[in-house]
Image (tube, rainbow, N blue to C red; front, side, top):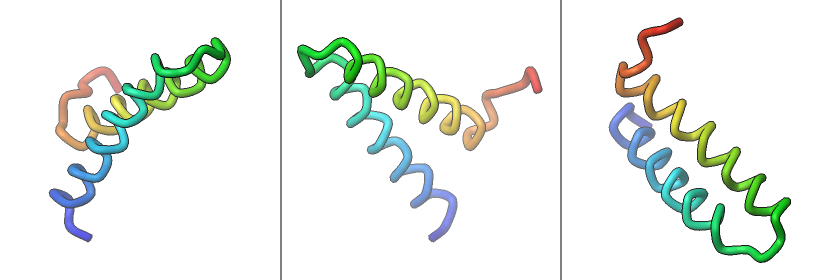
Length: 54
C-alpha cells in the first residue's frame, strides 16, 4: 500500500468516526467515537506534514 492509498483509507476512517461520534444516544459511545475521530485527525495531520510542534 502506498502513502496516497494509506492516507485515503485514514481519511475514510476519520469521516466514519466523525459520523459515529454524533449518531448514538449513549454519551459514552459518542465520546469513544469522538476520541477515535480526534486520533485519526492527528494521524492525517502527521501524514500531510501539518504538525509542526513535535
